[in-house]
Length: 358
Image 1: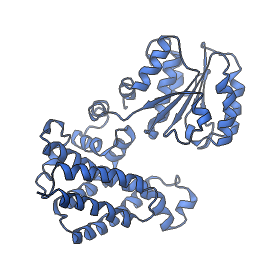
Image 2 (image 1 turned 180 degrees about the vertical axis):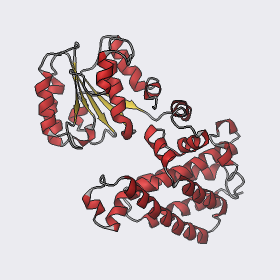
Image 3 (image 1 turned 45 degrees about the vertical axis):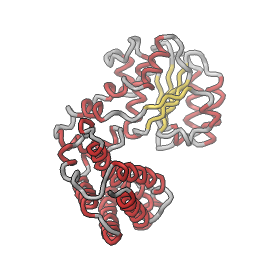
């Protein structure tokens, strides 16, 4: 079992809410923003335990902690009650229950796990309760991003953001669950600092194929002709990743996205291209550490050994390439053609090599 508490307890978000609890100044409502959507529900349960447990940190053993973990604590209600979207009906239920006295503890806690799915109507319905909450009522709103949350809601809550975890902390928390340490290090270096991304890369059967593609283009891409060749290879790899994603998420893909191959590609493209971007970025990041004489910061020395002698790179070209990868991340949401995005990024990497080549 992954030790999520060991990761969360060192974050500024956890420390802030813990400090509020210890000083007797708990906010009536918190917006917990966390990009680690696959584990957001688990983090919210830890925050709920923190508020309800009599100890300074959640003990994990008291009745409140145990029942919150199982979502059966009488004074803790989780939303959405059903489905994938927090509805007006969910908010009406929250408002009604907020006026009831606690059954076992000193307070009632309401956990909105998918706050970024709340409709505008549901958010507006919640405003009065956020403005004038009944005594002893605490609301936790979890969201992958704060952007879907109305400004009128954000102005009435205290924001706590769970930032990306360090590679070292992720390795310490996950190594007991994932026994292949070299594979785990690869997954962490390719991930985005979230547990979900690491677990995804660790279990991804296509990771070796992505790494092979990254190493070949880093070592061999020297001209515009190479760019076109590698763009075709990238498009073929994207096709394989889409098949893998479709198989792994059977029944979860919206009907509109599954109605045609083109619609499926548009839906999956941001997810699968991110995998490729992350792997290339991990190589470039370690190469940059090497070129800057910071080998102690290299996360995967074995993988670096296969690309550190690649021709045409220096620190400036690597910084340029990393910047272009981040720009590609933004473009992927507005570019329906994976081939065009691939070509743009590969030409940009080649441009950087030539621009700063000695």
